[in-house]
Length: 265
Image 1 (tube, one colour):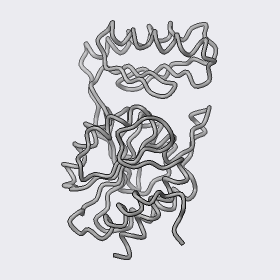
Image 2: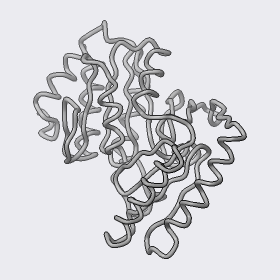
Image 3: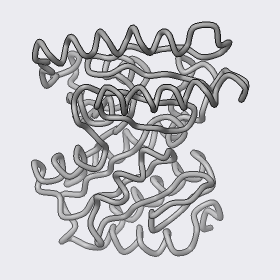
Image 4: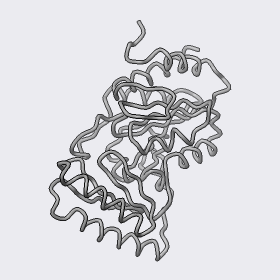
């Protein structure tokens, strides 16, 4: 029986994708939080759904399929939380960091900052800390190439001005600014998920990419991908993605359908 959580239009596209030999190698790329892992107030509590862990293992075993997680999280954080099979590409910090999971750990691309970028990053950290100071539930995360102002635990009276000040700080200092759900990331290296995905797909020679994500920052990926690609918005909100599923559970069900299509065609 068909899984009712997967809309008919997406089901038809995934079934056709499974039968299309010209779509190999296929790159299956996925956001982490809100896509494979239900959103948590405590980011350290995020985990991929158990059914998601299983389907990723199954997809990794299919010839001609490459897996990638594409996240705003710092690489070390993403690797610590993501239960993915060896061979999976990890794209962290919205594309500023990249690695591949091996049986022995991470094979990482080295991120190097110029002296000027390192100084700017230090200044960003100090200024972002001032934005968070005195506001309950607002906190700052430091990454190798960025600082992030988080507001998920804050009430609107604290969250809204903190986000506005963080965006203004990015404009003032001329750094890359990404404003997502309850978060503002300020980066000294230009990076976005769309550019990172297109670079990876060209390296792999993938004629088709499936990408699923839930956040505002995932719209950069949806916009950057090609007409033949499969873009899936997870959850509510405006989007340029061609397909939509209701929640991470439905997204995992769609991945299971894709696996079945790939292995029975």
